[in-house]
Amino acid sequence: MKLVAAQNLNAELTALTKKRLDGEFEVEFLAGADDGRRVRLLEEAEVLLAMNFRRDIRAEELSHLDNVRLIQITLAGADIIPYDRLRPEITICSNGGVFSESIAEHSIGMMLALARNFLPLHRGLSEGIFDQKTPHKMLSGSTMGIIGFGGIGKKTAELARAFGMKIMAINSSGMTDRNVDFIGKLDDLDKVLRQSDFLLLSVGLNRKTRGLIGKRELDTMKPDAVLINVARGDLIDERSLYEHLKSHPFFKAGIESWWIEPFNHPRFEIHFPFFELDNVLGSPHNSFLTDGAYAVALDRALDNVLRFAHGEPLRNIQRREDYI
Image (cartoon, rainbow, N blue to C red; front, side):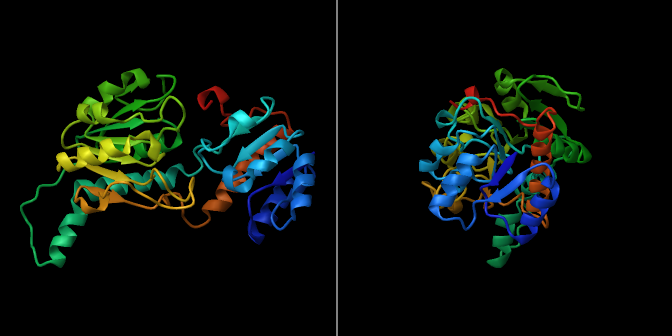
């Protein structure tokens, strides 16, 4: 069986791939191949390993994947795959949950920074303002809503529990074996929005969740709520969020995932002056990046590839109907 790695791997990750798949796959790499060899490798591939599919596979190369049976993505999100241009027989798996611990810590860090007014108070001190009157928001005793109770949501909930927070979660099934105060489906979104002091968006982007949070949803939330988005920018309507933040100075937002950023576009771009607001904290979609993160992600993706080779159940199979 032939596996073609489309993503550009360094020497360490190349060695890891060869070692994990030794004896199971003939492994080839697209990196450095000329156009003709790229086409030949893609035509022969039965398993395709990619990170950012849009960058790793050129649009004109999609027609050469006639023998591919599995596409394994090494990152958690699988929303930029051109499902409508791929044969329906191809199984597509993401790497969901691989960075859960790191992103959960980042989420709690953003919550604390916003709740404790770190940025405006720091700026005030730099201007000689010693503000001892601005009150802080407590995590303890507060309610945390989690939209998308997968790996990231569950890990963040564990940390939030340590702060004494109540947990209201939403997932696709409306069921969980985790310790939560409420579990529901997207139909219960308004209930969670109304009761949440802190709201985490950690749900995948698909046709059901695109634009999930707009003006109506923001108006449903508490006027001093804290919204954290570590998933995808397009879950939120950009204009609605900016206008809500500007008109509700006690409402705060931590934005880790942006609408136009290098992950899915060639540039970073915002259409409203978010960074002029004191109630916004941003980070450049790097919450997953810790020492050894790429090796951990690749190793887990390769584990799923080996499951495929052995005929075992696969993790994180993507449903085309969620995207097309």
